[in-house]
Length: 416
Image 1 (cartoon, rainbow, N blue to C red):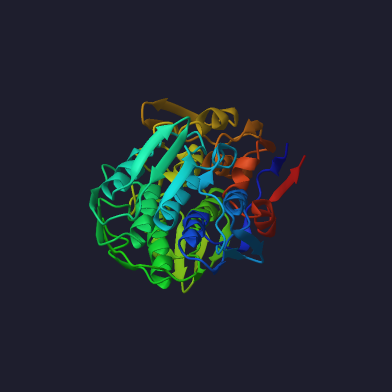
Image 2 (image 1 turned 90 degrees about the vertical axis):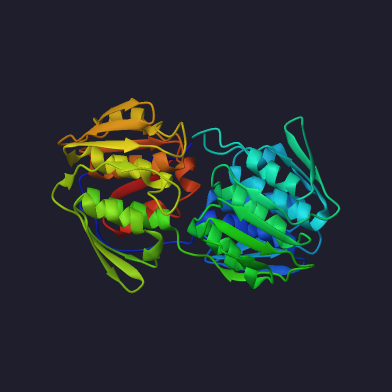
């Protein structure tokens, strides 16, 4: 099993390029199911989750190739509508094939999803929405069995603004008969990017990026040729890396408009962030300020930056309160950060973080994707050596992270 070795205490300096957003690329890859022909998706990062989705699409009969940031998917010859447990269990985003399969093929058999153990994340809203569109759905032996001769437009209210639920229903609605309205839809940039990709295929979608999305169904779609947006969470993580080490880093290829809540809180913590066209110049302070934060659906502070922000607060001046408003089990990194010397107490959905003068390197274990990023940040500033096990978690969401950090001067290496 691979692990990351970090010798802390180095001030990061230099320039880093942000990769494409995997949380945008995954649903856009799933959208290739909707249109027969050759689909091309650009700016796709080389990540474990992208490979997993490629394996799943290959199983369905889609030819998959990923080279130099471009994914090519030939979806002419779909051979099966079953997404088996062996391929779905490791990644929750696998459930995104449900809506497209049902819309194009009239049926789907998809295993209930897996992924990071950060909360229940039930798919009841996906199922409810598809049933409102006329699908017959049965849950049996751990699978979702769905059937519909042709989906019909409907008005669907989501009890919570679920990202994958919004994406699944939006893809299904593109080929439905009539008009579908999704109310209380997720507003994340990745949802908006999927909508833009679908529109480029000939879909008729209005309101993506707001809480009400309207889709006028069409009879058929054209293959994709689309460029994925930059990864806002990777950009936020590198801003945090510069801030926690007191470094000076230029971050290129990011979308500042997708980072407003993150930038606001990081500036409040004392990090100087200057916006230039297509890039950010970041300078960390000698000592960070303690700041309270609550995670919320977009455009609020993202849950995917909560663990990284906690690493900053662990070495700040004062006490901060970090409240997790999205997932009920997203403080698993706390025990590992305590091993590095962090002073953190969790009560319910709130963590009280008392900043300490110095963290000290220790062996730690990644428990999920963003937890692994928080341990990397803590390791960068800790005195001595930090060893992070279960590195496969970070490989799900960060492309070549050790290479990018070494390019900024960090003493970091991967070893088996």
